[in-house]
Image 1 (tube, rainbow, N blue to C red):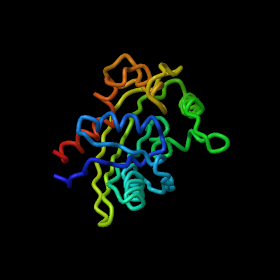
Image 2: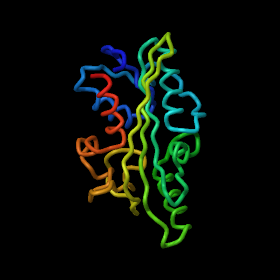
Image 3: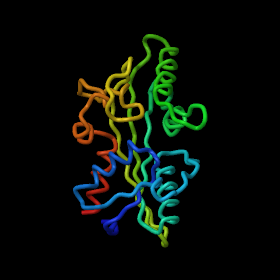
Length: 203
């Protein structure tokens, strides 16, 4: 069992979609979530080679700068035909001009590269989410990882979720993450699976 978080937690992300999802998952525990952008915390450069590396880096930075416990998520889409890419570079594949992220462009890029591999190539893919929680002052960090398998679809479907959700069809389901009601996605997503591991330790 890990240390108590307290009643206020910094969510180390500037992504509004991630902030909404994480806040919704923590709401039942009475934990108030504050986004990094609200505290004017910088986004550290993600130099890790794994999802856990990057999640721990972001959580540690936010905890040290805010003086509060911080939770960070690093997640991405791993495509079998592309050797696991974009993986930890998922957000960077969405970088457009002037530093803005364009996930419609990123989805097109993924699909074009899969198509270039030939018609028989696998469309299998999975989402990974690493969660790291860090406490200020003493450097303690705990990490958890979740995964959900599925396939890519084209064209993208649905306006729910964020990121690559509209092109990802989770295994055993007929709706993409982009078509699912948020509660339905929360029940099966890679982020929810990582959260269940975190919650088990909190309890």
